[in-house]
Length: 119
Image (cartoon, rainbow, N blue to C red; front, side):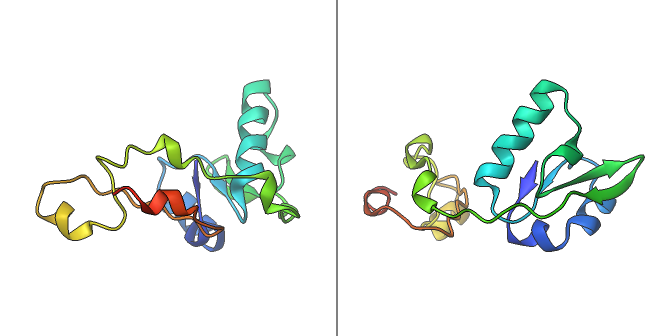
């Protein structure tokens, strides 16, 4: 599963050129990714979930766009799931020196001030 700005607009290219990608979450993924995982768990067809792209017989296909999230407060980023002692978005130069793993975490919503304290 792959999502974000780039795959939202280039889903056909990605599904054509990268066979390791099975599903693309297009647009806002907070709700769509959850619905896709539930559908796959329940044996439903990917087409039953709005806002995704996949392959049918090797050909890229997409469902209708998902509805935009009306209240962003219904979703949050799980910053506590990131081991900030090992991964830091803001210390790329250190990572290049080989002393710290670099993991890009991008949040286009809002960033809680507590997440700036570590890293």
